[in-house]
Image (cartoon, rainbow, N blue to C red; front, side, top):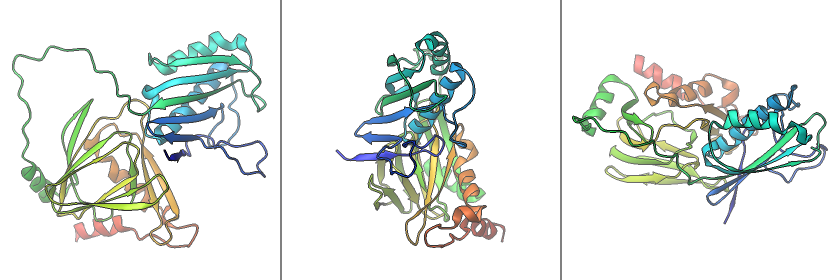
Length: 326
């Protein structure tokens, strides 16, 4: 079973105090359906310094760091099955437990709490965790369905024609807790890899899709989806569905759960060096969050410039928008 390294720049980098030596540690490793997250301290991701404050404030910072790494691995706190906590002073346990309970908001896990001496001065707490990626959110309690309920029936060809006529890229058909479905029109400027915390099913309504995706070792592969075909993409796989503006696909996934973050990554087309990552909390697909991720990338030339070979990715978004105006 291959291990997949998981990294988030929204959390501190794991390593030794002696920065002159290479660290064998990763923020997290995915092995099969499990995600193992290294012990996190109360460090500010931006400054890499211990956040000031008491045990309550440090507890929240640690849990926020864990949450960011879980999101990078396509998971959330709802999928955590075990945590191990180390407190510098066990007398802090009651105040720690209060802050912990507030943050977890009723999520049930197994947990071990011990006392010890963290490796860094000023650190009052450290926590690691294990998440099981195939856990799904608990179903809401049964609610009585109204006597009269009209199930939505949608013509996919009509939705595609509507997108073509209006120039829009996304039409949301419905958006429920466990069911999000939309029709997407192809984007000529799409080149990033999307890391979705939810599984996706893609059905190609019209035209052909070339689905680029990356293996755990970073190798890029392409699956060709012909018109009328369907493909399943598991959560956490970097993927890039590429099809022209006159092609359309239906995407089935689900709404995001609390703490889940979508990630969009770009690589240099010349040397395959990592360029930039944009993170978004996707709360409403009707707002076309994918477009906003692209805009953040393309509007900044520094993001599009390869630090290894110097290649500058053309601003294809600006060209596409100029073409629409013309």
